[in-house]
Length: 170
Image (tube, rainbow, N blue to C red; front, side):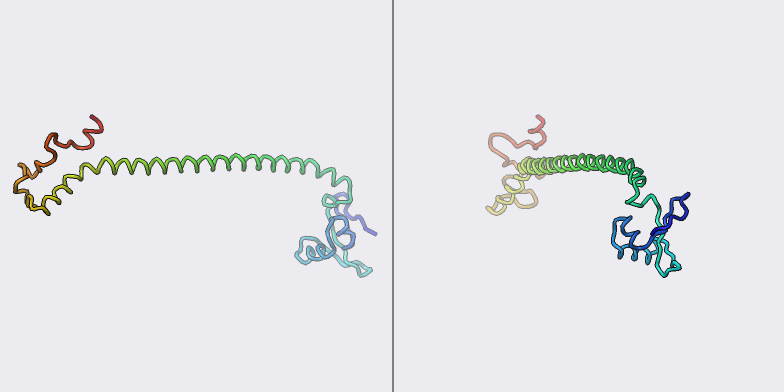
């Protein structure tokens, strides 16, 4: 019942029912496409609505299916490529996360080590506070344990305490 109009440009004039069959969709889908304007239509002399289809989209036409094969293969190749790329990027992101976690751990360890190294440099200040509480030297640096320049002479009876960087680097 279909009329082939414009065979030179590959356009078919078919009914809604035939269009649905040829495109592999429901008649409701064809009517919706007509409403959206994605399919051209015309009212026939017999009162039926006819739809214009490209022969290229016709699923019942073997020639149109053969023409699709290279396109389908190209799309499959692209999908495979994109899947491989996604896998590669996923592994790369996981590797970056491991690197960042390792750097964060190393940073935390170095921070702890720095606190350990700086702690001895702060001990004289805490010793000074203990002496002040026990009636030792005054805050001005004058008193029993004071040395010239405000330095305390009570750092240790047998050896004076060196800065941490001298102990560390030698």
